[in-house]
Length: 98
Picture: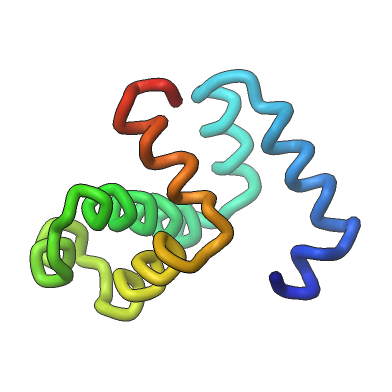
């Protein structure tokens, strides 16, 4: 974990995210917090994670999302060796529980 993520200053961000009640609040918060480019990058990573979880190969994911091989590789690494965030969220999205 990076030193930034260990700092208490990031706790306010995590608490803010946890306080979000619905998709409309989430959209409003993220649109204020992030630039358009950052939101596109985050959305693309989520799309890549979903497609990797479905078993698609890099070339198929690149074609569907336009993500670079570096982005696909990074998401794949996180899926397998990360903190478990994707493994937690992807099944919830797939099951319609998120």
